[in-house]
Length: 326
View: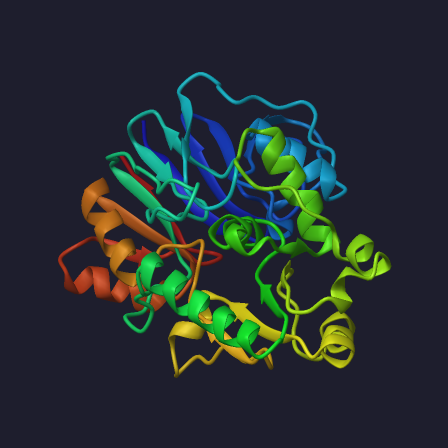
C-alpha cells in the first residue's frame, strides 16, 4: 500500500497503512504513534495521548529534565528501534524493512559510545546537521592527544581547565575520555553522569562544583572540570575565570569550519560532535542503499544536492512537501 511522508508544523509525519507516525514532533500528539528518538530538550514534550515509542534510558533522562514519559513501548508490532549512537538511549526507527528514520545519528565510536549500525531500507529519512564537506572531523585519538597537551601545558602553568560540552551527551564523553585527570563536574553534568552510571556506563564519580568550591578544593590549583556548553559571557564561566584564572576549552562540531565559525569566546575550540560528519553521512547513505532519501535537520538542500550528484534520489523534506513511496 502506498505511504506518504511529509513535514508539518509539528515535525515529520509518516503515514503507512493508514497509521500516522509522528517522528520527533515538536508538541505532544494524541493520535497515531509518536516516536521520541532521544532526550535532548528540543526533542522532548509532555505526553498528550496516543501510542508512544521510546527507550527506557530516554524516559529516565527525560524525568531528570522535568518531562514525564511513563506510558511507552520499546517494541511494537513491525516498528523496531535501532541504536543511533548519538547519546545514551538514542534510537532511530525502522518501519518493517521499508522506512528508516535516523533521528540524530553518529556512526563513529566515541569512548563508551558505540557507533550506529544503520539497516538497509527502501526509504531513508536522515538528519544532516553537518551535511557539508567542511565538516570532516579529526579522529578521536587526534582530538584526545591535542586536548591532553593543552591541559598538560596549562597545569604546568598552574592554571585550572574547564572542558565545556552539552551537559547531556558530550559532557559524559568528556568525563570518560579525560577521567585520568580526576575532574570535578559541574552540578548539572554530575546529575546526568549519575543517570548514565545507573545504566552501567563506566563513569568515575566525583564532586559537583558547588561541593568542591564550598570545601575550598578549587583554591588548590590546578584542576580539571567538565561543564555544560556555556559561552564565555556566562556568569559561571566568568566567575571561574575571575576567581581561579581558569582556561576554557569548548567542544562542538561547529568548530571544524572556518566558514561557519564556532564563536563562544572560549580560549580554545575543539571539533567534537555526537553527530555524523559529512563523510560519515555519505557512507551511511551508501550502506542503507535506499531507493529514496529525505534530508532533514541541517544542510538539507546542500546535502540532498550532493547525494543527487552521486546518483541517489534525494530531496530535502520541507513543510508542505509531500511524496509517495511504495
